[in-house]
Amino acid sequence: MKVAELAVHFESTYADRPRVYRAPGRVNLIGEHTDYNDGFVMPAAIGFSAYAATSPRRDRKLLIRSAEYPGTFEFDFDCLPRQRTGDWCDYVVGVAVMLQQEGIRFAGSNLLIHGDVPVGAGLSSSAAIEVASALALLSLGDRRLTLPEIAQLCRKAENTFVGARVGIMDQFVSCMGKAGHALLLDCRSLDFQLAPIPARIRLVVCNTMVKHDLATGTYNIRRAECEEGVRFFAKRNPSVHALRDVTTDLLQQYSRELPPTLLKRCTHVVEENQRTREAARAFAEGNLARMGELMRDSHNSLRDLYEVSCRELDVMVDSAQGLPGFLGGRMTGGGFGGCTVNLVEEQHCAEFATRIAEQFQAETGITPQIYTCSAEDGAQELPQPF
Ligand code: GLA
Image 1 (cartoon, rainbow, N blue to C red):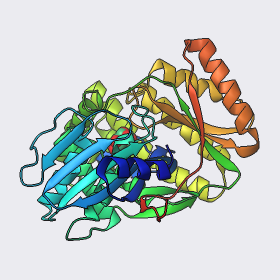
Image 2 (tube, rainbow, N blue to C red):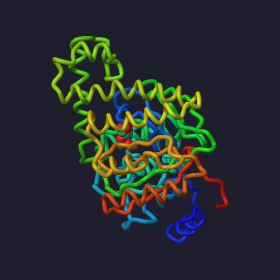
Image 3 (cartoon, rainbow, N blue to C red):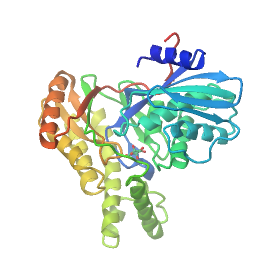
Image 4 (tube, protein in one colour):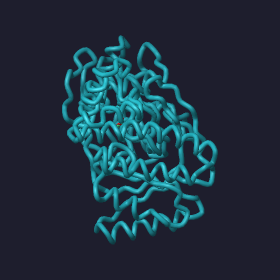
């Protein structure tokens, strides 16, 4: 659906002209399962986006509809639900609840949500909806927030309202992404550097079509394991507040005392943080061969130590090796299904897409979807007329 069609759909639904806000999904080049450990990540916003069209109402109602999903959800800003309802509108309601908790006051709002980020593919469709909704709601509120504040608020909505204990990466890059760049983000300070992606390189995203579900999945278990790791090290070294603070030396010193599963999880996080910083340096120097090696190591570590890959992701990663134009690839996002991200030279993208799809299908019997993406800008209001 084009944005102009969304505006027409809005007008026929609510008999009003909307303002429209866009927030993108993302891929993460490297730095996986490090964000909630106060570590480093290197995501890029992509063209798949969520859109929130909105207009004010005279009453105190919040009306939410989607261009794709059924249902009209009607709430009152004076008594928003305290818990998730289990419906897709939770991502929007959670944001409204958090905005109110910030003390922001609203008149009523009509909302129409549309998204083209593949759902359950690990490309952050939920963060995109949250951020687009936050921008739309804020346009009708009595106070402004900065984009990094919006990212944190949306993360809080997902943590406390939706119930997925995600880190800050997805919401942050959806807000702050920049065309042609990845972000090297320090998830503790929220400082970031822009990492230019060479113009001749595309981000080829390969969807295994195996869906993952963060809210109910192993994701929250991994978080709990990391917290157990932090408690273990903090007892022995009070300067440890997060796995980000665990050095290789410290890890080695206690490797025999740590239960084997915790050792694997902590080793992944410690080494992935090192890999991510090195990747940013390699990328900046144009050393794409090293970047490719680091992406491969990251995948292997997620597969063997963090144990969040799955057969289909491994097959997709293996299928890319040696294809023309391929520079590096790995699973991207939370794992347990979803997509791989591949750095591919533009001139070889079409052949890469055909051959990886053939190989993956031959091995798994699944027809994958292949998307050739570029890094795009983060959240914004779309200029009118649409
Ligand atoms: C999901 C979460 C992110 C991050 C990744 C894993 O995408 O939303 O916060 O933890 O998994 O790196």
